[in-house]
Image (cartoon, rainbow, N blue to C red):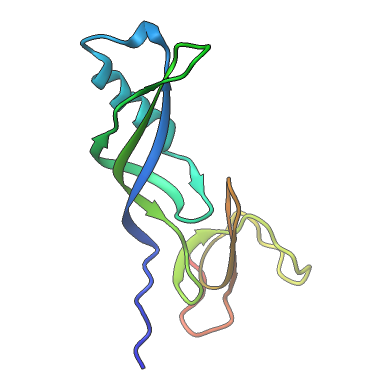
Length: 140
């Protein structure tokens, strides 16, 4: 049985909703929507996909729907983005941020570790790793 290949970095097709004030309606509206997509999406985190590193292409800007009462328009965009989500079993290089065992107290140290577990919520991805295998540990 062959397991599916998990990749820490991947390109995913995502959607993002943008609310646009009426003052931005006009000939440059598409340019503004594209700029707003990059500003809103890049650097954010999704529990499903991980960190959105960069928007690489805009696929579609849906037809705007004018919201009653405010005059704002809601646009649902589809785009491709480079995302970062670590998976159990991957080996990564990183910097120790927090140490939970008192025996090993070297924070802000560069290490190569193997991820043994992850957890994601709406704003962050958490990973737990080990350096107790060959070729893992402090990187000089």
